[in-house]
Structures are given as structure tokens and as C-alpha cells.
Length: 335
Ligand code: TYM
Image 1 (tube, rainbow, N blue to C red):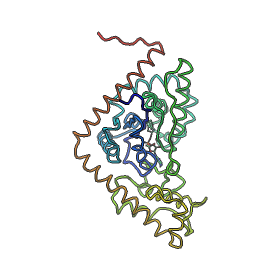
Image 2: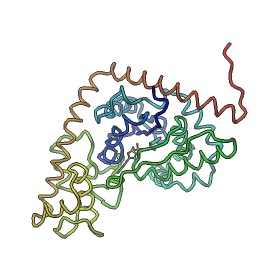
Image 3: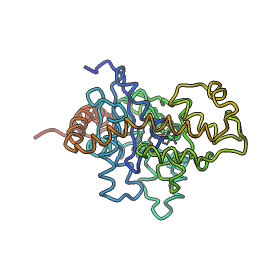
Image 4: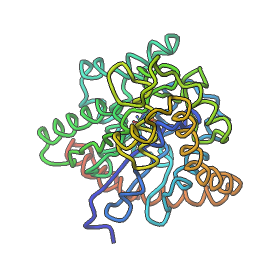
């Protein structure tokens, strides 16, 4: 049925409560591909353990991330939704691609540098080779397009390099994937430090809007958002806080920068921040309601995971068989 469809793959780590950055930079854009592409959306739990996780929390967040996928509009009938550790080919190809990924390449990854600074007592090998596993996630499905926020661009470039390297050693094996990075919402910034990315793991809760934050909390956090000493709602250098709020407002209303500037002309930052909070809370309310409904039905989520993993594994097996043959591994025979 999907034979002629091109493939989209993306993943989200179940390593914290998802943020407005995850939503606007990635998940909100996923559903748009469902009709035209064969889509795989994965909860990447194997990536999450590169940083120490509490087992019970990891398990709960894995269910929750899957529920959020569905609550954000991903129809399980039209998309393959699954958990990474349920398809062993990810770890298998991850190891193989480790052997085609250079130490120097991995050393240049800015996310590795950031995360090893933040987790100085646990700079494990997995944190270092993480981008090779991410390349495996993508290349396993012969993916054409990978919708991600801009922070993943460097990892995507590495995945492309690894695919090209493997293809040039063994002849065409992998499709070389392209990133799909939204223009306006590629990098939603922290509300407390607008020069920094909004991040799941930020210790300052006021810096981060969580997809599941209640309405009053969302509005309060936007009211406290750090801006500048001016009063004009206009995108400009030195106005990173306001520019970030404009991107968020625009993502929810579809309004252009000029329209936003004239809408808030002479009204000051207070009114603008309240309006951003309201459109954001309005947009997230149905997602939250659907999330609450879904998380109360664990059996349903488990059946989605099971079907998704079966479908993904079937497709991954085709790539693995090709890879094994090219490398010189013996295909295991059934007894
Ligand atoms: P993760 O879990 O950190 O983030 C999930 C997605 O959200 C995007 N994102 C943002 N976009 C805009 N503004 C922000 N502040 C913001 N914060 C996060 C991320 O770019 C990402 O698209 N390594 C990946 C997960 C992964 C993956 C993959 C993605 C594993 N394998 C294969 C694509 C394909 C990660 O840690 O995303």
C-alpha cells in the first residue's frame, strides 16, 4: 500500500515533560506529512538513557510521549507510532554505523559538548555515539525527510555523511535523508534567557512552557517572560525576547510580523504577553484534553505500540538484510 510513498521519520526523547519548543519545532508539523508520506514517529527511549533516568519515570514518559503524539493529531491508522527499544534493529544498525562514524565527527557535535558539560559525572560512550544511533533510526527506514528543530541539524548532517560514506564503500544502500526544518519555529527560545534554546531539562520552570501546563500557569509564565526595556512589539536585534514571543504568536495565529506589530502598536508589552499566553493556552487545551483521555487507557496505548513496532520491524528488517549482505555478514538461516 505504501510502496510508492516516500518516507518521513522523526523521534522525540521521553526524557522530560515536552515543551512548546518540541511542539512548535517538531510535533505540530508531523501530521502534515501523514497523507503524502509513509510516516514513522518514534519515542526514542534508547536515546534517553544517555542521561541517567529514573526507570519508573522513563516508563511513564514513554507512554505519555506516545499519547502526546496522538493528542497532537497523529492518527495511528495513518502513521507508524512506536517505541525505539521495541525494534531491536535500531541498536543493531546503531552498532554497525558506529564503525562508519569517525571519532573526529562525533567530537564536533555541539550537543555532545553541551550535554557532557551538564552531566560531567556521566560522560558515557552512548552520549558520545548518540548521533550514530540517530543515523541508524533514520537510515533504517530509507527515510527521505526528517522534520526536526534546528538543534538537530548537525546530527542530520552527520547522518547524511554516514549514509554517503556507507554507500560509497558498498554501493547504494541507504537513501540520503534531507532535514525539514520549519522557518519561524525552528528554535523556540527560553522565556527566561531568550539567547538560549527552550529546553526540556531547564531547571528554571519559568523558562519553559510545557505542553501540559495548565492555562493559568501558561499565562503566568508568558507574563514573566524576559523582554527588553523598550515598549515596541517589533522583531529586531537586541529584542530577542520579543522576537521569540512574536514567533510563538505567529505560529498560533498565522499572523505576519507586520500584522503583529500593527496589532500591538501603542499597547505595550503587557498586553502582548497576555495575548501570546492566551492563544497558546487556547491551542494547547484540546491537546491536553485528548492527552488526559489517552493516558487513562494504557491498553489502547500498548496496542498502538505493538502494531507500530511490528510494522516498523518489518520495514527495518529489509534494510538490515541488505546491510548484512553488503558488509559481509552471513544471513542467519532459520532452522
Ligand atoms: P528532542 O527529544 O530533544 O526534541 C524533539 C524535537 O523537538 C525539537 N526541539 C525544538 N524545536 C524548536 N525549538 C526548541 N526549543 C526545541 N527543542 C526541541 C528537536 O529539534 C526535535 O526535533 N535527537 C533527537 C531525537 C531523535 C531523532 C531521531 C529525531 C532521535 N533519533 C531521528 C529525528 C530523527 C532529540 O534529542 O530530540
